[in-house]
Length: 271
Image 1 (cartoon, rainbow, N blue to C red):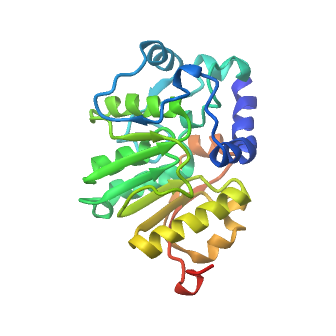
Image 2 (cartoon, helix red, strand yellow):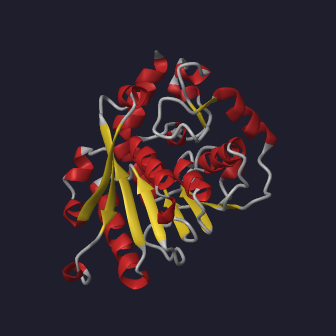
Image 3 (cartoon, one colour):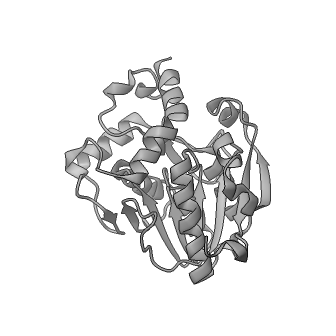
């Protein structure tokens, strides 16, 4: 299948393309959305793009850790599972895959609503928006989803609709190493694909913890780039989930995904 080759590009090439985009986002190929940086509840979607996404994704809740959440994803029944990747008219659709780190975070929040109830939550690199959706379902008082891809932001709004939720605010820009407001909790999944990006995350998240006492939860299935980074020594394992068979097949045989609490030691505060 053509998309299997495409999926391989997403899985293996994400280290370069995704990280470079986070370091210097210049906008995707869709000029219509080049200037768009923020969505809020009540903002309408472009009808043409909405129609394209609805036609070329499948609504599914199976094969993942969170059957409570319905999502629009690329599946074997979608046209672009078979088409050549360069026919996709927008940026690489990382958002159209429910990555295992995000699945673990979402499952943990749904099972432990106290983690977010009454708290403000920033979902960094939100993708399909599942973890932000889980936070809203579990009673978070404020949720902001962040991604660098404007099409991801539009997909999040569609996914909110699927789950009978009012869309939460979405910001479309690289906020790493910038002022991003005050948050009780920051969640991020599957973000450690590049050493420079990981270094930036390491320092930025540590600053939040030091200045604002923000709690940080990270989801990752144990990829080499994550486990080999120095941040690993500052993580405390919260819970590990066995991945469903479909997700294992989608992710080169990864069998589990872990939620980590990031707790840098005081001795590293001035690093």
